[in-house]
Image (cartoon, rainbow, N blue to C red):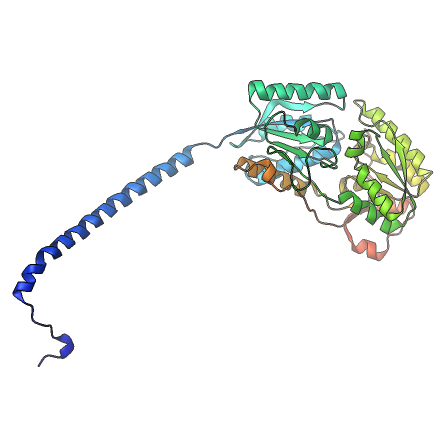
Length: 409
């Protein structure tokens, strides 16, 4: 007797005949559907492969770049070099090892090198795309007019790299829509280059900003030395005050109860020798009247002349602080915040450029740069002014220099 779970009920012949055609029809439908799926799958696979091949063989747009600056300045060189290294790190150019000229603040040679050597298929540095006003107001106006005419008539500019306050103010306007990156500006908000730290205010504009940076500098400088009178040199014009961060310095001085002792002079000059002499004269005067000197960003601060500039400060035995950052500590200024590594700043800017090349609006890219916070000091200068840094200060130091190089030409 068969086991129950193996036995099948008898099949009626009549029932089998009635259900045969529907079953055959269903089977045929399944076969047809399967064949259709196979054919469609093959079609879409071929289409996707062809599209992918087209996409991979279609070159990226090559963005044509121009460079604009108010005039030669050491920080422009360093931040430009850091940005170029960042572009290479991100694969936007092939060669980012641009040489920085020695004993010169010029970026012209760096631009010429990039035009010949940067390589890659994403960015093209235009040989006739270098614009420096050499701190000449008339040339500044002429350069701006030439660039605007070039944008509207030739249409061969895709990116503007604007270094410094002058260039940022001239390029970050509503007169065009070319993506503009404002770099190496002391205070882009106060200068009117961008609307705020969070929003540039224009779709085609991006600037690096560091809110509260100069207030922190003054607060830390004062916390270490407890001075009462701090000397500061700047050009007393709207551009001069903005490019040296004077509103922020004044605010910090008020809050800390520091007497700010200004020495105003003409600094943004085509004649860099005269600019330096004007700065040196002010530093010499302030050294006899103040307990400390805060050295601002200005064209008189020339790397190969820093040692000469510091002589009155050494003679007076008073501390000095660099607004620019540790690059000037390496040259002999006593102290600064070690928060401005040029490669970090450059990579920040390069990332902003990369996002725009990939389709983002400059306005939508984060503008706030937050560098590490620490101290940079020059121990040689400390010795020369008779200051022995206490242990708690040395513990907070990220960068120490022990020489004051003689870079005089």
